[in-house]
Every structure is written in structure tokens, then in C-alpha cells.
Length: 437
Image 1 (cartoon, rainbow, N blue to C red):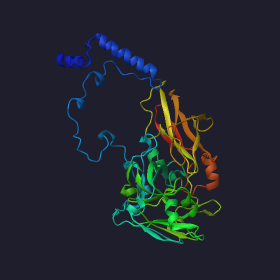
Image 2: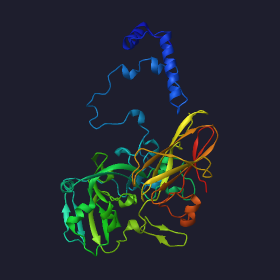
Image 3: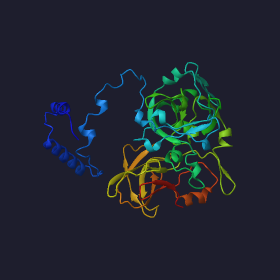
Image 4: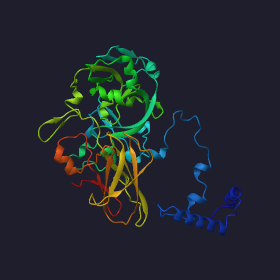
């Protein structure tokens, strides 16, 4: 590559270093040093790489004016990182549908609000916050109606928790259906939630001794309702109005939703309009026709709220293969583990479909009822592998194999699917969803 005299002078003025053979030697030595220090990468940039020696076009012209996007937008180069839907899990008009989170592209444990998975039963309600009301009534001493401003006057709390649809992974019961992590496990996300503990509000309401259950109902078109035990509401349930530092978005229940950490996503009622305390379950549609499972014995399981211990490898995966990885290079295997019954304590990785296991490293924050990152450094030898992960929580629960799960639940149920997930990594780096029974 040759530079014009003007460009040579420009670079020389910027660095006070003449652009000659000694400068090229400097680049070569620098790159060699970087490649030896960073053990995870065997790739060093070329000394003749134009991305280094040539001024990039974005550095020679003005960028966006500061006021172009009052609400920031992602880089146009990240246009493929979006939620996705499928007709298989949607009504024909997509009012009752699921939008899958691109968990293969998420970094850390906080999902941006625009990528947080969305499940709606009657479309996204657009609620006027000035006309919003929350009714708390039934078997209570002091029924109350709260405005949004009144809810926000209570002492606030901020916590990080995941929300997972109990149908997450549902297409897998009878074998792999999607060769995509996003469609396999994208019915979940994790966020920072701000609101008020429900127990704080209930101190003023006064729950009568006969009240053992509460009906939580949304104000959207479907008026989706679920029954929960009073104990959960008095434990860690919250009325939340903010997510990741901003007001809830409409598809997450603006202006107020219920948060029941670790329990079925469907219980975290959006656009919450009332809490009615009762002495027995309501047997609502969403807990009789749906969100219940028929076992091989013919007996249905109902009211099994906590989400089980689970994990999945996010890199590599069918959406993010190793096609650019060379034999002998080091690569970081990453994944997510979570449990609605406690805190992740241990994650193992297998390279042979579960015959042998190696302990992975937990990284970053490790919190209860929250996503936990795990990692394992691996030297790619170019040979096919069967890559699996297996998580354990502090309640002593460990992910089952598919055979262990099917033995108890059969193949008909679609909820609470937490068996070990396996990726087939081919010699060319291609990744496929397979099942090891």
C-alpha cells in the first residue's frame, strides 16, 4: 500500500513519528506482542492492514448531530439484533403472540428494553397513566384504589430478576424443532426492576385471615388473570413501574405490572388493574385451559409456579457458529444459567454429549432468581464435538437429561421444559440443535 505525501505528513504530524520502515517494524512488533499477551486469540492484525494505516471514512467527516435522536438508537450495523416472531407460536394476526429475545446477542445479564421478550394475549394495551387505577379489594380490612402517583410515593426498591415464559423451549418435547437458540430459549429476559414491595402496600390494606389466594387481573383487552398464593405476595412480589432505569414500555405492562420473581412469566401480570383477595383459587382460563400439564398417568399438574434450574450455551450456538474459527485457536464458550428456586452455584460443560463434564467459571454478578453468566476457555482442535451445559442451584436442584424429564412428564406437556440442551459443533464450525437422550 502507498500513501500520498499529504497523508504521510498528516500521520507524521499526529504521531511525531516518521512513516518509514522503522514505523512498520513498530507496528509488527506491537502486533506480535499483543498476540502473545492475549492467549484467547491467535489472530494478529497485518502490519499492512488498511484499517490501521488508512484514515477511516467516519473519521474524516462529521457524524450525527447530537439532537438527531432525542431517544437514542442502536448502530445501523446492529440491525439484525431484534426480537423475532414465528407463526407457530402466534395467532394469525399476531395480537396473541410471543416476540423472542435474541439471547445469543445479549451481553451480560441485563436485556435492553427494546429486546426484552414480549408475550401478549390481546395485543399491546396503550394505557393513559393519568386515568390508571389499581384496585385492591376482597378479603381485606381496608380496600383501596391507587393512582400511579400514589404508588410511586411508597418507598421504592430496585432488583434484578429474570422473567421466563413457562413454555420456553416448548417445541422441543418431541425432538428439535428450531435450529436457533433465539427460537428455542428466547421466551425469557432479565432486567433491573424498580417499584414497591407489595407487602409494603398490603400493610395498609390489612389482609383478613380467610384470604389465602389473590386474583391478579390485567386491564388489557384479554383481561388476563391468574391466581397466586398470598404467601408469595408477602414474600418478594413487587408492583413495578420502571425497567432498566426508565418507565415500563407498553409491551411490558406500562404503567404498572406485577413482578413475582422466579415464577412463571404468565403470573407477572401486565397492565395490572386489580388484586382481589379470596379464600380459594379462581380457576381462571389461564390456569385451567393453559399453564397446566397432563402427565402420563392422565393426571394434570396445576399451580406449579417456580421455574426450574436451567442453562444453555449461547456461544457457540446455531445462530452464532464458529465458522471463522481456525484449528488451534482459543475461544471462550459462554452461556446463561438461571433458577426460579434460588441462586446458581455450579455449571458444568460437556464436550461429548454428557459422558464427561468440566466445571465452568461463573462470571459477573451471581444473584438469586437472576441470569448468571458462565464461561470456559477452549482450544479448538477442529474436531466435531457435542456441547452441553448443566446447572445446579443452591436448593440442590440440577438440570435433568431429556430421558429423566420424559420419564416423569412424558412427551405431551409443553411447560417447564428444563432438560439439558446440546449443540452439535461440526468440524467446519457449523452448529446444530440436537438431542442426546
